[in-house]
Length: 352
Image (cartoon, rainbow, N blue to C red; front, side, top):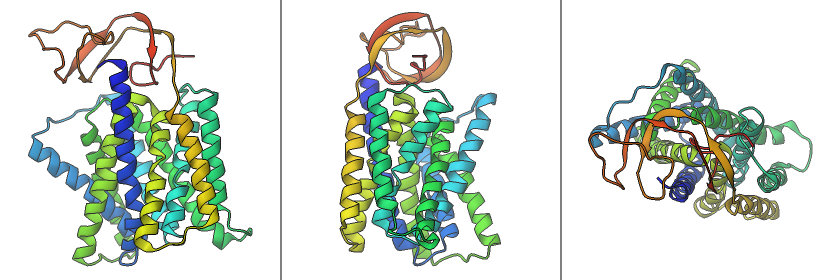
């Protein structure tokens, strides 16, 4: 796949993931009237895992095996983003408006970027940093309750804690992002949903009615399953921080849906927060990054396409693979020095 095509594919996948995830917050708010936060978190993720498993069965998808050193990264992602994250979100959502919680979810992009930059050493520049500051400012405007009262702060802090859990999940998932995206999302959904279901039942939660269970499963499949599979594609093509930035349009979509479905008021803080966050997202969307860089020898396996403009995948095949055919196999990258627009994807994790 040529560099610009990979970047465009990652951008569109990230934006589609954002739209699906953003719609899940106000819909989950409606379901919270019929189910406990912990039980709803379990049902959302089980719907995600079971739906993706059924989809893979229908499509006849090939089985996936992770390398031995990748299993720990996926396990950590499941615990952080699949077990802790959704429970914290449901607890926070129970105490605040869905539109406000939706916009506050932009904190996930900030936490994702901070971890990617300072813990996992992903490159960034001034434009990206300023964009993140604008998103943080919008989150502070949105979360400020008017007085320092713990009951008013608690829901917002719980939502922020969920964002931190998902940020860790995003960075750990990047470690396995070359694997089949729908398989990764399926495993995370089944593991996280099953774990939360057991914990919810042990805590005394009861199973809601069948319509609520089916509704939660459908919301989970779209907002957690399909969304996560698309998000993994973004991680593969754009890197963690940039994918998080594109994904940060999700709260705007969620807030709009909450105002439409739940008749929540449009307030001045909501508009101010939305404007600040829009500026931050725009700065990320207009980022351009190109410079001479060196590729070290590397062997890995992932889906790719051969083309005249793709210098990264010029390896031979036996038997021959026609140009433009998407395929996957273990392949070797030779040392290469060149310059082109790129993000820190699987082939561009070099130092700056």
